[in-house]
Image (tube, rainbow, N blue to C red):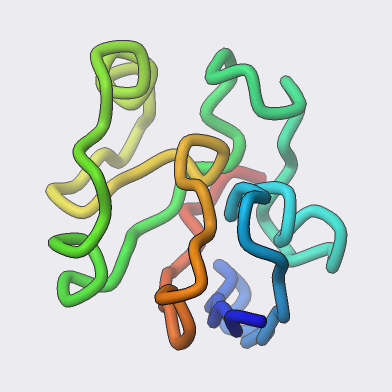
Length: 105
């Protein structure tokens, strides 16, 4: 089971064990990672699961689609490594995935 590492806006760190096939947002929401609000439930409609993916992990992920890209354009602090956690499906090879949660609160 992959372990995902999150650093929240308040500086707290959370490690989440997650099942493959779930999204990063689902895994974070179940474990109540601070800053992941997930208001739309994963529909790519709110950006309350905005994260900054570690650059080493970013290049291992599939590219974002046009809907995620458009939603990220509406965020206050979009960066090159911005992604929506609801759009990243967890795979077995994501053990050690690391991200910083954007200040979504």
